[in-house]
Image (cartoon, rainbow, N blue to C red; front, top):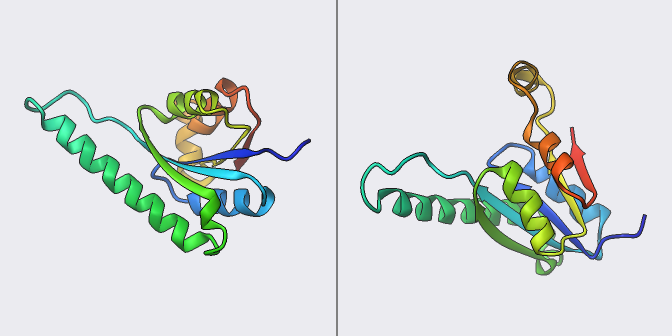
Length: 144
């Protein structure tokens, strides 16, 4: 396998995004990394403009969280090859679409692992990572 030029690391508001970012930085030392903070939209508007304002606030919070994640994981010398982006939507839809539209070569993400999330996934259906793998034509590494 040829090393990718660009790697997407989605942060889905889940634990273990630090592991995915660390893995991407170490495994692909020459790749440009996009840390994608995915913001799942809220339901129906509570009042005119209310959801937009809340979504903008949530998007800013997601970007701030991704910035903190980057600062806590990456060596300061590596941060110049990481860019932070935000996108709104269902993660299983946003990640494959973003990877395709932006010409990403590889996706690295944390899976749900075992424990409570793993049990819930067994009862309620597939997890986000499995759906991303299925929908993304580029290679996807899932850390379990």
